Length: 116
Image 1 (cartoon, one colour):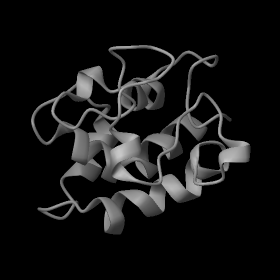
Image 2: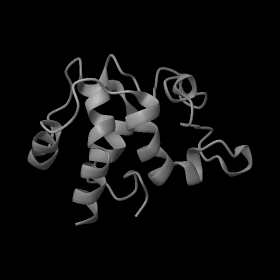
Image 3: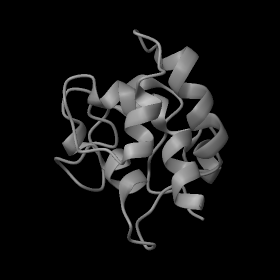
């Protein structure tokens, strides 16, 4: 149930990433995708979800940031990883290369985000 809730919670964000094509989505996400607005805005649609689910570890408070990743500004969220060159948390043009999408959709309890 947690996995389903995580996926559905991030459906808006996933739309942003898959707008140019992307990974196969679970059926629940594909159905939610159909209900999304035609145009997604980072501040209006994506940032509130990230704030609720991710900012405790990846928000504006530098003292609490984990994995050297901040998601509160698009330019930080879209930047190449400092720890892993060639890896992008969010790669809007290539969702298959987006570590966040991989972490949200994984079945691996050691890698899944947000942490249970």
